Image (cartoon, rainbow, N blue to C red):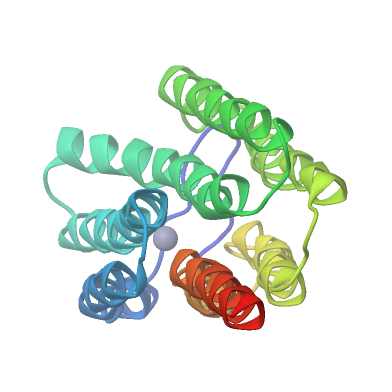
Length: 239
Ligand SMILES: [Zn+2]
């Protein structure tokens, strides 16, 4: 472990920490591609398909941009490219948060609130990315605060949810991400802190991916099957 970064500068990991950073996210690029394919397979309506693709692509983007950034960072070359991917690595977190909310706000029945919260979460993500681009590596605590605000505030939408299956897993995933933030802020204090943060992201994503597949996708078919079997039984009763 190296010393903590000075204000306004990025932490410089040791070689072994670099390798751990690359491996912990690099290993998940292919599984997340398979993850998109599985979600698309489960989708039974256009909305389910769209939500699956948006959420799935954000998973692939998160792991691939992160891996590319850490690999370039390890190589120690390509200063401007490294800077581009560092901003990208942080910006992708905003996209990932908004995409994680998208299936819930789209597929759960929340009346008109779903659409409004969906607009809000993507607007916050756009503001976060603009902030990241403008003030990269400055005011780091403000950056962390932004992540937490955008990650937590849309969860108010839960109160408008008419049916709440899957919420336990979704919240558990969110809690894991939150706990991981402690390590995200501990570069230079705890060895491999950033790689540990990566692991928290993976576990949080697994919880939420499971919830999306189990409680949100494939429901359109179930609903229509239920309705048609109900209609069939009524017809039979009338006969
Ligand atoms: Zn990282």
